[in-house]
Amino acid sequence: WLLAVLVASAAWAQPEADFGAMMKAFAGAAQSAQATNAPGMVSPKALKDSLPKELPGFERVEAGSEKQSMFGISTVIATGVYESGDKSLRIEITDMGGMGSLGAMAMMGMSNSEVDKETRTGFERTATYQGFKALESFDKTDQSGQVEVYVGSRFTVKVTGSSLGSFDELAAAVSAMDLKALSELKPEVVPVP
Image (tube, rainbow, N blue to C red):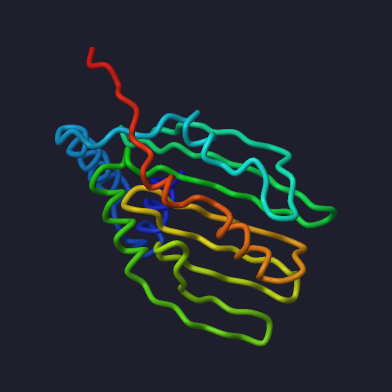
C-alpha cells in the first residue's frame, strides 16, 4: 500500500509523466534493493505481539498482522483496535525494513520534518515520545486525532482515535507503548533457497 501511495503521489505531482516509465523506475529500485541484500523484516507474529494487550482506560478488541509485497518490496503491518464505550483507538505498526533504501529514505524524510500549526479547531505539530520523533494532530470538532511515531530507521507507529475526551488520551496510549523494545525487534532469518 505504501508503494501505491508513492506511485500515486508521483503521478499526481507530475500529470504529464509517463506512468510506464515510473513503474519501470520503481521496479528497478526494488530489484536494486534486493540485489544489495535489503534487510529482512520482523515476522508478522512478532510485530502483532508488540501491540499492547490493553491501553490506559481502553480494552483491546482486535489484533492482527499481515505481510504485503509489491514489485519485490515488502512491509509487515500489525493492527490493534481498542475501545472504551464510544471511544476508540487504532494502532498500526509498520515495518518498512523490507523496502531497503526506499524505506530508509522515507523514514529519514518523515523524521526530519518540523510542524507547528494551530487552528480554531485543533493542531498539528511535531513532538517526541520516548526519544523518537512524532507528528501529532487533533481536531476538537469531532474529538479525533492521530500520533505517528518514527521508531528507529524501520518502524512507524500510527495511533488514531475518535470520540476522545481530549488529545491526552491519544498521548497516554502512545506513552504506554514500549517503543524502545519495538526498535530492538530483529528481522526474522529467512533461509536461502
